[in-house]
Length: 458
Ligand code: UGA
Image (cartoon, rainbow, N blue to C red; front, side, top):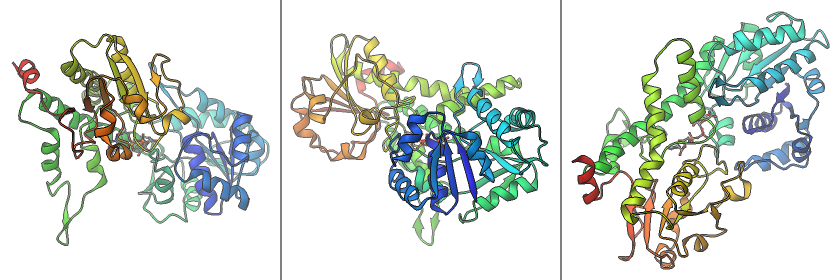
C-alpha cells in the first residue's frame, strides 16, 4: 500500500521503516528539512538498535522515502498515519502539533476526490479522535468522514531500545475504527503481521494505550512502595520479597513442568523510579483527563507521588553513607532513563543530579551511550566523564541509576581504588552479584541500614 507518515519522531520513523520492510511504499514527512536530508542520507536522528540498517535497506530498495512536503505525500497515499508528539502539560495533553498536522492533511485531502484513511497513531486521551481530529479533518478537507475519507485510531506499543522488534513482532494490533471501511484499510496494512488484530471503537483504542502504560507504571510504583518499607525495616530485602512474589503461579505459571517467567515481572522490581517519554506523560495525561471528567484518580495520583519520591530516597541513602553532602563528589552511572536507549527524557538520573546539586554536592556522570546522542542538554554543573575511570577518580560515592548490562562486568575492584571514599550505591539493584572488595561499602535500594532504619521506624 502507499503510506504517508506525518512526523518522523521515534514512533513515526520506526513505523515507516518497518512498514517499508514489508513492501509498503512509505513516505515519511517532517517539517524540518535538515531531518529529511538526514533520513535521505540513511542516518537516523536517534539511537535505536537495528533501525539504521533497515533505513538504509529500505532507502536502497525504494520502499522508503522522506520529504518535507505533506501535500505531495498525502496525494500519493492510501493511508495517512499521524505520529506527531502529544506532550502532557500542566493543562493536560497538548494537541498543538496534532492540530497543525491534521489541518495540513485535511487541506491535502481536499485536493482531489480520492478516498484515503487517516490513522491517528499519536497517543491521545479518549474521545480526542472523535471530538478533535474528526471535525478538524472535515473542516479542513470540506469532506465528510465515512464518505470522503476514513478515520482510525491505531495506538503504538513500542519500547525504546526494542522498538524495531516490537513493531515487527507485535503482541497485538489495536484498530479503533470510525467505520468498517476505515478499519478494513488498516487491517490490510497489517496483513503481513501474524498477531491478534483487535477492532474497537475510536475511544476504546485510545484508552487501551493509556491503560497499558498506566499498568506498567503502577507495577513499578507498587514495587517501589514495598522497597520503601524494606528500606525502613532491618532484616527485609525487596529483592527477596519480590523473588518470592514472582513464584506465585498466577504470576509465573508452570507449563509442562517448566516455569514460565513472563516479561511483565521485570516491572515488579524496585528501582530509582520510572522515566522516559511515555510512562510519566501518559499517567499524568490520564489522571488529568479523569479530573476533567470529575473523577478522582487516587491510584494514579499515588503512582506518580511514589515515583516522584524515589530519587530523594536514593539521596537519603547517599546521605546516610556520607553525612553532609556539601562539597562531596558524587558520580552518577547512567543518564539514560533506562538501558538500551540514549533518551534522557524524565530520567531519574537527572532528577537525582538536581537533588544532589541542591544539597551542595559536586556531581559528575557517565553513560555509555546517552551522552553522544543526548536529546536534551544536561545541567552544565554536571561534569560529564568520557569514560568510567574518569567518573570514579576522586569521588566520594558512585550511584548506579541506569542498569546498563555492561556495568555488571566492570572491574569494580580496580575502579573503586581511585575513589576518595569507596561507596557504591546501587539504585537499580543491578550489581548484587559483584564480589566487592572489603574496602568498598556497597548499598542497595530496598534494604535497611540498621542505625538509620531504627530512626526511620522508631
Ligand atoms: C513504554 C511501554 O513499555 C511501551 O509498551 C509503550 O509503547 C511506550 O512506553 C510508549 O508509550 O510509547 P518505554 O517508555 O520505551 O515504553 O519504556 P519501558 O521499557 O516500558 O520503560 C519504562 C520505565 O519502566 C523505565 O523507567 C524503565 O526503567 C522501567 N522498566 C522498564 C522497568 O522497571 N522494568 C522493565 O523491565 C522495563
